[in-house]
Image (spheres, each protein chain N blue to C red):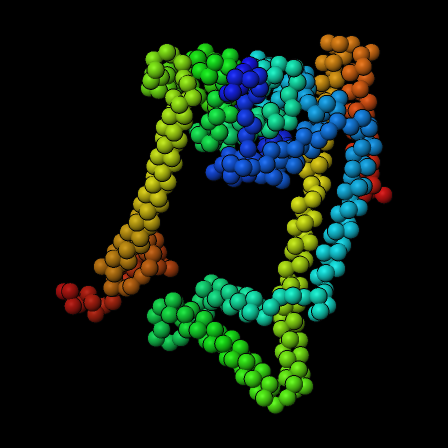
Length: 231
Length: 241
């Protein structure tokens, strides 16, 4: 069959992703190792690398302050967003004679925003005062402020990092129930295929024996996994 | 065509807008493909393919072999992951009633698949052969060729096919809209009837005994079994007299 250019070829594959320049599914190279060994090796290798990466991520959940690089402005923005989102969702307690939710939310946001602005201006004022009084005093005040900011940022980072580690784990590994489902289904399909092989090409054919060995390997692998939690 | 409930494919899903699998789904599908790739060629031969489709769908043998011949575009007797992925997308599109959207989004690959001879034109017979994959009925196919065969050669070239996909997508969207509107209307009617009933109940209870009672009039009875309207006082009776 000829392709669009006239040369022998195949129709264009469905592209993955949301754009025209998308990723094709990668085809892995053939591997001659038996399936049980290969899957255990593959699993062990990926498990090791996973553990190393994920361990790092999980340990960075309790980072020291010096390793954090989140600026105070970002923290303030985050807190603003949180406050505004809470305000919009809950609406807060109603004041007497106040009709609209929007007005209440806006005033709530305004108060919080004012507080943040006040804190920032007070920070600035203190810094300015510090510069006039002396560098050491400024340094101390700056240190306390930076300690506060880094503690705030550590809280926000600690909220984010465990989630990141969790999602990385999820990205790199298929869930166990899904693997079990896939293996049991594949086993059923291949057992039926083995009957067809035996009836059509005979028991002694290379392909029939290869399929038979593969099925045995898969069964052993599955049994190992089901027995491990029992022991 | 229906996927077997609880099978691995049954748990996968297409993105409704682009009719593609997510990267995680593709990864899972690749693992599954490699489980079935017994001979380590990154391919499935016709026997494995047949048993796989037989296990996860309700397709007949002839339909399965037709699909295999369609996907085996190099005529090597095996299909690779690319073709397997395309097949899974087609099956999922049918399972989730996204056929029109799928053909619209992927008109070129679908056209190339249906163009068995490579003549860049699809005849009625070829289209009919694969119409079960896209849930196109015979009558619809006849109408398709009648409406969109602009060149009049009883075959569809790519432009005519693309026009057809645009129109069918438009029809699908109108159907969706109409369905939504019907649902909203019925919800609105239900709410209205509920409101009317509650108002009626209030009005009836007020006219009977002057008691502002909430509830359906038929349940408006007291503990003694008499209706509230009957429990008049002596003073009211005298007034009426």
